[in-house]
Length: 327
Ligand code: 8YV
Image 1 (cartoon, rainbow, N blue to C red):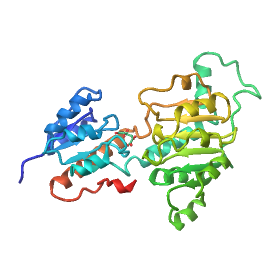
Image 2 (image 1 turned 180 degrees about the horizontal axis):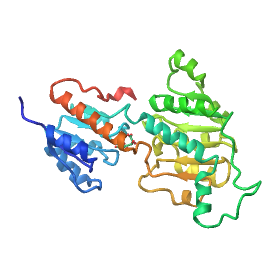
Image 3 (image 1 turned 45 degrees about the vertical axis):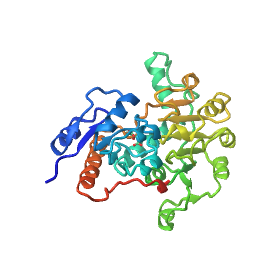
Image 4 (image 1 turned 120 degrees about the vertical axis):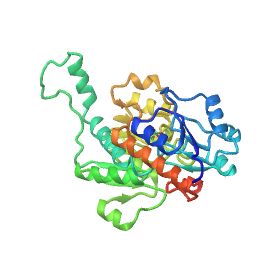
């Protein structure tokens, strides 16, 4: 058997994942749970056969140019690959893999949680109790908006968008979607989903919008100031995808001026920074990028990473290979 590849992992991963990696590969772990600096990343990329980064590592063209001859695979721990310059990697013949599929249900659950939490003011209600300011039930207290019977517009009908749609149906929401292409007619039928070719028109007609597309050059600021302005004043927006898909400062404006009813965000344009103006708004529910944060999900993500590395090391095309043209 050939020698084990040197795998460098950029962040602390769950113990069982690290243990398995140590068994299978010559693995160098990062025991400190903080992102590596660009210099540390560059050093890792000079040495490794395989790099295992996460969403917090910015693998840009400059970094890829400095990669060592040995680096042949970047097996990212996560689904989104917008933190990696795919074109630069391709030019250097570096294969990229991600971990799709295993975080679909968890992310869809978190999306649904926000879809419920924002209109029903769950976080505000909890704060009322915790601050000891609840004076008791009132007929007009803590009124939110009904979920049942409303229109949900899903931007990006991939795995996660579809899983959100399935859940939403159980809550009596009607499903609308915008996607680069129409989904299979059978799926459309199952979800009784309405396809909107024109995003502007969909945005203007929805009660709740859910962002479930990847961040790519084509989706950067897809929800820009003009489009946010098309939303109805009673409408909500939730984002569990990537902060960059929404123009965050424009979002702050429409929320502050009550030109939309509220927002539920799990992701931000400049993580870990959160626009301080968002913190002042009580019509925004703000979560710290935890859509896929389950013990089971992280374990499954680790397994995907391992499957991809093993397959690549055995000379195969890894199952979760990412090609730039996907986007
Ligand atoms: C992960 C995510 O936590 O997979 C993604 O795209 O945004 C998150 O679910 C993160 O990417 C891990 O790298």
